[in-house]
Amino acid sequence: MAGIIAVIFTNWAKISGGGTEETQALQFGAEQAINLKSLYLAGIMISALGVLDDITTAQSAVVEQLKKANSKLNLKELYTRSLEVGREHIASLVNTLAFAYVGSSLPLLLAFSYNNFQPWWLTLNTEILTQEIVMILVGSMALVLSVPISSFLAAKAFASKEFTEQELSQNHHHSH
Image 1: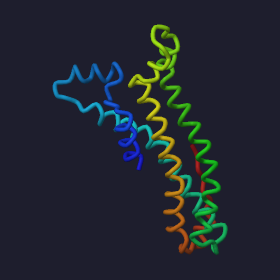
Image 2: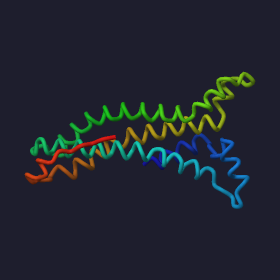
Image 3: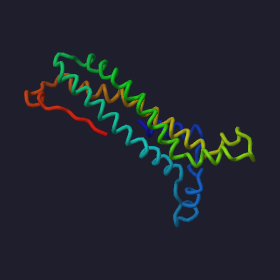
Image 4: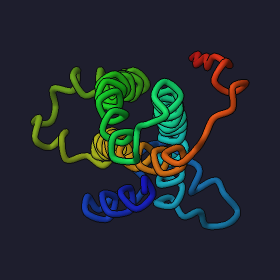
């Protein structure tokens, strides 16, 4: 899902993947040609995986705990209730994701803010800044879409599950 969104946005924004000095040095220093666009897309996927892993695991745990708390909940009720919790997860993690991307790009943002030689609209159209914006958008969209999808899959898996007494007595602990 994140990969499809990344490809769509990368093509739409006409990103080549060569917007940084590092990627250009990699391209010129390599013995073989490197597909910088694919490298950029792989970077997006890797950066999104951590937050997607966290949110999907949390949503599945929410559904399981809801079912353990009330064994009569059906698929629709499990899904609806888990989405209520999921909205809170989304709000928290989208902020975390944005801060992480901005924090890692802070030197770039400072460099642009001190650049008095070119107008702001030209700065906004640089590939390196576009790459950062696309990365934030793709990560956020994948995060927002992952909550209803993971909630539905977990609700489908747990809707007909009958828990044993031992499973019901085990406490779930989620830590970051």
